[in-house]
Amino acid sequence: MDKNVLRAIAGVEIYPIISFVIFFLFFLGLLAYVFVVNRQHVHSMKNLPLFGGEDETSPTTFTPNLPC
Image 1: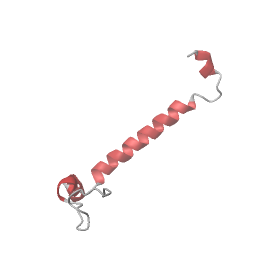
Image 2: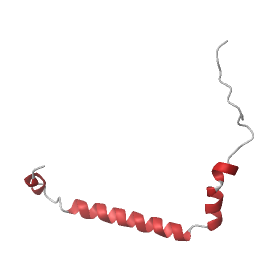
Image 3: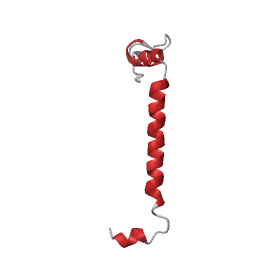
Image 4: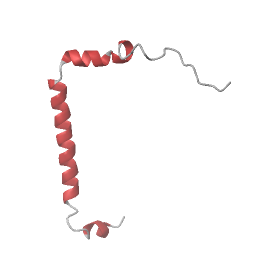
């Protein structure tokens, strides 16, 4: 790409700064969440695919609805 194309856009130098600030704030928020989150909640979410989330109304076997 020709360098003059980007130089011709007014205010183009602000876009990398804005994207860096958004990334940095998201990273800080995620880091704060990791340190604040309840450890029991993390443990229950870790075991959720293995031991939780099953309700009694859902069928345990797949029975396709095929026409007779």
